[in-house]
Amino acid sequence: MDLFDAARTDASGVPETLGNAPLAVRMRPRSLDEVVGQQHLLTEGSPLRRLIGEDAPATSVVLWGPPGTGKTTLAYLVAGNRRFVELSAVTAGVKDVRAVVDDSKRRIATGERETVLFVDEIHRFTRSQQDALLPAVENRWVTLIGATTENPSFSVVGPLLSRSLLLVLQPLAAPDITALLARAVSDARGLGGSVTLDDAARDHILRVAGADARKALTLLESIAQAAGPGGVVSAELAEATMDAALVAYDKSGDQHYDVISAFIKSVRGSDVDAALHYLARMVVAGEDPRFIARRLVILAAEDIGMADPQGLVIAQAAADAVSFIGMPEGRIVLAEATTYLASAPKSNRSYRAIDAAIADVRAGKAGVVPEHLRDAHYAGAERLGHGQAYVYAHDAPHGVAAQEYLPESLRGSRYYEPTEHGYERTLTERLRTIRGMLGRRD
Image (cartoon, rainbow, N blue to C red):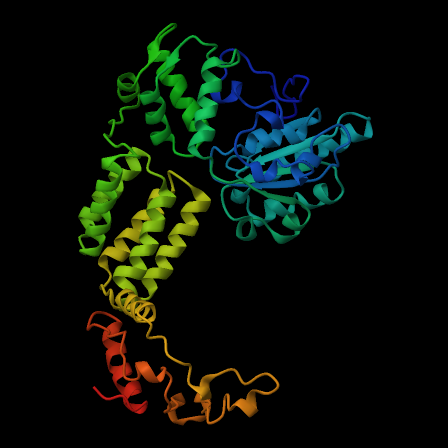
């Protein structure tokens, strides 16, 4: 098959697959109804659904998402019965792109089918290679579908991105991968019921593959071949075939709580190596990376606090990154956040301060808001004395206005007392000065 041979397609436009094709290819969805996950793209009337069908507009698309989330599948479905040409940005160059475009223009002139050009890993194209696509996309000589695992705002040139519909794919969840594995075992296109997949083996595949559907199906195929016709894909066979140890870890039982507890306590205790060990146990066992990330965000606020305010920024950035990229790459993000937080100076004084303030409020010590601090932006406020005698902080020396801010019943109360750790050492001196200017002496 040369560069311009379209793949043979069935009635739905998805390429026919030979019996020796990889399981992940044989199980490629033939319609949007077979696609798992990506529900945000599959709603009735969504832009993606409007791209599929006999009267669908010839719109170029950029698909952005982690590996194994269905970018190639969606490219085939969008292409439909149009001629489909696939290039990899890893191996193709400007010459290959221009050859596809020239051939497509010739076919259009002779009344043949439109060409859909699928460029996998389009972020790897240089600017000049991407620029070579612009005239073809703008004049609709080809319909471009680009797939990327990197943020296209930074990896795809603006003019090309502005001429394309951007669709963002999310990491697949465990139920999505489970459904794919079950379908692959029973479907005639897949294993056709020739093997039985037990629950322990399925869970092991999920742990190793993470959110990557392609990897999960590849692993299943490898283990099924080892099991043979009529065999059982067991946990022991999965472990032997994948050379990956089964980890005793019940995500709903004691191991789940014990390991995450040890992980958090190791980070809090500043033992980087122990923290990474427990992180590794959770990663290998297939713990939800978003759960780990959430716990790190909590820890950054509770146990590091103002000793290193950057800790919370790092933890939140890690949570956002993991939520987007999924696993297995998410392990790197979690490791970076873990090592930073474990190495950071520790303080729980902000945590203790808010709890102490809440305790006073619950004990009925809320008190009356001082009149000079009350809202004065409404008719009649002046008559009530609200806002009078208020000193605007920016008009005061050093930006600190010496006036009472707490209710009378709480005057002199202190909730936040910084430590001498990290950045809080600076805050200790700063607050001593500020409190002195406010008339509150140690």
